[in-house]
Image 1 (cartoon, rainbow, N blue to C red):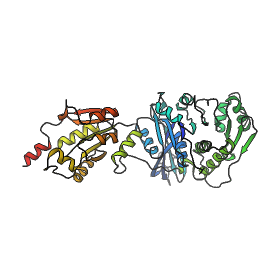
Image 2 (cartoon, rainbow, N blue to C red):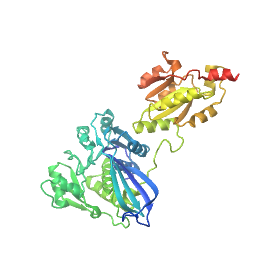
Image 3 (cartoon, one colour):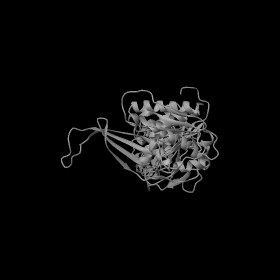
Image 4 (cartoon, rainbow, N blue to C red):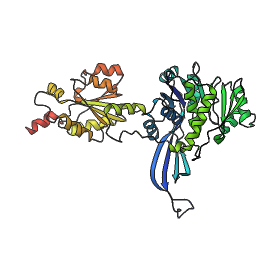
Length: 449
């Protein structure tokens, strides 16, 4: 799995869930019911489903594109923050709330799992998704029964790359012609509608009925039963490992490792051997509970304007930008910035450098140097990032940020903006907000003098 890669990225298509582990300790029972009281010490979030499979493949060193449906809700935005640093995300719309699975754990033992969210993928043709599939070196369909896999059939109709399909009992039937199917025994039972007679028979039968290149029915700690079209049945045993037996996520690990191996040019049997081995080591290391992801949130630390722009786009948010000198910050500025921020999910303020202000306003300005102006703006709760530009207009800065909305104060109403051309080129909306009467830096300087 360390050979040089010259093919296209691994494209993962499927349903992404939010998995949250609430960790704590317990040494007493609740007084009103015979249940343990958990003193919470930490919360760890990570992607689940197709998101976990894609994340694990990316950590193998693959270039990964994840095509998935994510909701425009707090859990959906959290998911995008978990994924955006490690892979490329092509986001499809979701009908309903993002699915979240919360495990309450004490001393490494899961006590209860709480499931919420009813989201299902909403079909919408996506040129970005089609381009990703065209450039793929291999495709993994990670079906969790939420509708994205049904769209995969159309996306993959003309694909000429190895396709690995990891099915789900409530999901779509795998399309004909897949290079490899990786059902668990429970999933194989569902696919064998006229009766299940063990993993060996199921693997042979599904190769024929689903016209697949190969089927590997996974059998947990026993490995997998592999049937290859036109070849013998092979038992793929796992490596002998000690330790943890939390198998949550093992199927995702097997499928992602096998798909990545096919992408690198491995044969089917070698890819399944790699997948079984990686899944076994994954379980030994603690399963999905052992996957740690640094959560990217806009409020975690001061971020650059370009980081804010990238993260906002990653979770499908609406990026707002505005610009100006912001010399002697006053109530009119604050009102404008608050109303601008309310138009979207993040606000970047573009500030003229000292030299730029002098060219625009004359040698006596700015009153406050750029370092202090930036510091004061960053302290406002409505401002997510500040970017200083040295040109006379923010056109180049707008081109870098590519905001969805550019906000100007009301004193520009009816005028042609110097940045109009670049705004039109990137398809940004221009919104003019009225200013507070009598509030201006010029008036403030006049009063001081």
